[in-house]
Length: 483
Image (cartoon, rainbow, N blue to C red):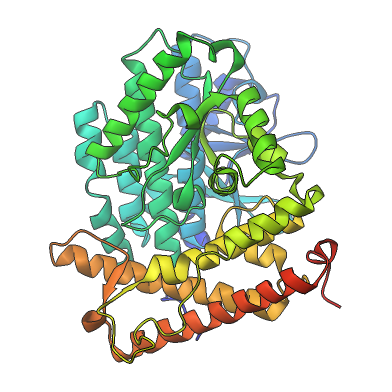
């Protein structure tokens, strides 16, 4: 059932993007001397080796900001450096460096060897020779959009970029990661443009959370862009809170215009249920955890556990901190398990019990979502804070509820279904149709039909086993290592 990933076209490893030897300086070097050395070496950055053996980084942009603020005199490299720069290791893929660049909205990604010594760095311009060119170009265009019209116009090209990345040979899983990262960039720029027009509101007074598939970095062309917001206590009372929700509604409207729609059920930061103070989120999470059968507690817990901050405080949110205590509530874990298994894989999606063959298979509802739900619950059961489905499955592997073999099968199944899902959505788009998760039987090749059927049989078998474990094994043993 395993299908090997497509090879990257052209430049594959980050090593091949390094074009200049590293410029490494001491933290006490003056900014004036630092600028001179960067100019002389032609390097757009300098790595600053700190006393504890780690590295900071100073970029051309950092030097320009210091000059513009008239802070050159007396400033050192340590004063202006980014102390926690994104870092990759020699041998990592160019796509991994690109994802860090997008995710951190960074100017420079340092490249070290396995001993931690800087061997070079990559910047956005270095990707002009890599298979990820389209992704970084799109990111830069979106990040620099000067108006809402420009942003929406550029963002509507995102499906074409996805098609281009796949055509260049980037593996489907990496394409989905890049797609999710660029969506983050679109959302951040939409927030920036909306709040530029509302100077009375503090854009640092809230944390914007991406929910659902984009929160897990698994967004495909049909994915909704759901969201929530955690407001600082100082702005979490009327009338300020209403003003922020009105601004959030503008952000959602910009995203809709950019082709990034929400699900229509109100799962957005503009909805009072999804924009609360940190204290309110904490209280709500405790209520959902204690009585998940009330007020859609199980559904809300599932939504918020997938939340990922993309603007504001990047730390663990209040609601996530509370859910880390879930294992102390056996009844809640049992109810959440039932909820997680409620979406059942259908082992024979292309053949009914009566013998007739349905015309459509919903690959998300019947295949992808059951795996996502299992992975989310399994991660909660072992206290993992991972968000991507594959990472959650790997973290929970080896437990009584999810043995290594079952986890490995679900990882393979998920990757295969996501790959097939993306490929067919691109075909739908080429045909002038809106990308959906409903695949027509007549459009599936015989091999794909076999792959889908086998994948759903594997998922159904894991679900049946989890049902049995849930019914007959004590709750405190579910997350125990398999004997």
